Length: 256
Ligand SMILES: [Zn+2]
Image 1 (cartoon, protein in one colour):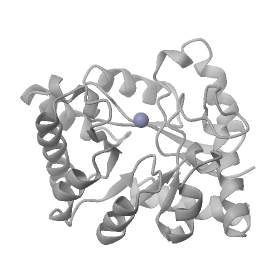
Image 2 (tube, rainbow, N blue to C red):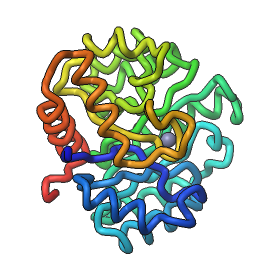
Image 3 (cartoon, rainbow, N blue to C red):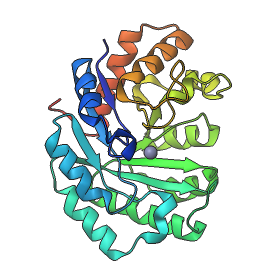
Image 4 (cartoon, rainbow, N blue to C red):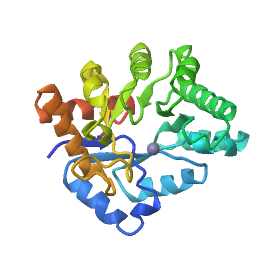
């Protein structure tokens, strides 16, 4: 049993509506100390706050997913600021750029991302960053913002994002992708300093082997930790402990 903080888990999504209680219960009973739930749209903020009040291990973040960047207006930022005062709101996310799907126009994605990054810096909160097929623009926006802190969520092994993260002191969210057969991350993980690794599921998505294709859940992080131990030839307990302490540090979860 490992001590685990799932730093990015959409347990608010409908895939968990039928058995959310049980999933959280078995997570807690098996070493999962905290589950961080990022928002994707403004309607999530209040819903997540309620979840965090109902379930002790749940913490949440406020932000707008790049897919929904086009829905953002001044009211969205005002709402986010309100939640940042809540003691269980621990970050700004998920925010970022997604040019693969491009559900929102690129220029709007860039503006909304930059605005949320500014907000996070101003309020001294970490960010949870989503980036797909937009490495160059992400670097452009972040490189001048040296005060940003947080996690490159769902890190998949991009050399550009690795360099950016190392330059800025960002953490790398490692999840199921590490266990995938053709994952490039397997080669790159050796270059990611352990003191900048945090674990995440991105549940219900991206379940690790041997659960690939099924609904993901916080406990499955154990498979990721074990895969990493195997690749790096290190003790899994040790890796789990480091990831746990890193997550506590970046999200200011001292009391866990
Ligand atoms: Zn996500």
